[in-house]
Image (cartoon, rainbow, N blue to C red; front, side, top):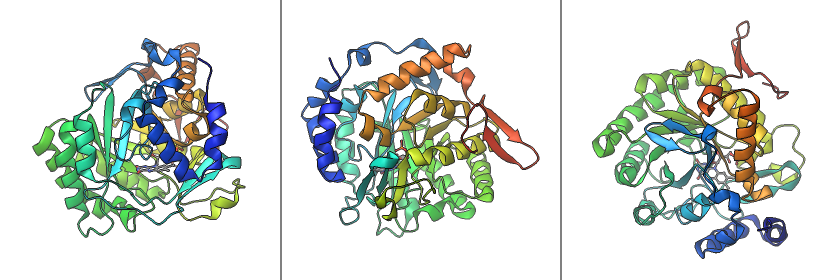
Length: 372
Ligand SMILES: Cc1cc2nc3c(=O)[nH]c(=O)nc-3n(C[C@H](O)[C@H](O)[C@H](O)COP(=O)(O)O)c2cc1C
């Protein structure tokens, strides 16, 4: 079947960004996604892409990042585009509306998005209801947040863990959205220590062994990176997702919407999020599985994340610009790149591009012209 996205995209572009997203979700719910599925998406993944992590068998390392399917409405139709895993959320304990609209902006010239959604969420009950009816046998992560008006972040995350552990294959504690006041303060050393122990206990009491990951921001200074790496290893979480959107505005951005308040994703996030990934891989000495996310738009980008230390990758923004067939092209291209470099499995390639520059203590990824 020909790729229909080039025909659909001009229609979606004429709508405000959030209306286009809502229409897409409705179309997927109605089953229209199957018209867009390439035959290649139904083929088994190349064995070179397979990996076992946390006792889960990932047939390929390319996942859908959080934020596309906040309320677990379309994880099954999204899965059929060929993702190796799908992360729903961020879900907050109670329903909340998020920030006033407009709160989502496309930066066409920069292949980027700015959003200040602010955890619009139908709440845990709605998401759990949909997840517990799933027929899909793919891997589903649940990304958890706190309510904006909650004074007790630990209690909110612990409730999320207790209630979703049974319907999730892995859980994510999201402490890195820039759109909930005070949230990113939880990444600081003392707050993070105080947060993780009770959350790991809540996990153990609900479903021992369900992997618990933490998603961090790209805007972290050197000392904060060291603290997070040390605490992650010490507390015994299962992995880190690197990274959420940035509040920074890299100099190369040209779109007027870049001035909007919120988190920036897409192409301009690639270099900074990959540099952070490489740094955390070095600081955790490769002992913690990492999910690399931020600006991936091609197989070469995904490969660079893997060489910088990611065992798995995720994307969101590039899908808006390129459409769902991007998933297949990334997977196939990645398999070709691995073979061409002489790897026999994806796990062998993880972290092979990281060199520590001992003189400065900084980390860069080799085989790239990105300014790491
Ligand atoms: C519109 C939008 C909403 C998002 N919402 C969430 C969210 O609810 N929770 C979360 O952890 N990340 C959220 N993200 C961040 C993405 O999961 C991802 O970390 C980030 O966009 C970088 O990846 P990308 O450049 O491939 O988009 C959102 C991103 C976008 C563009």
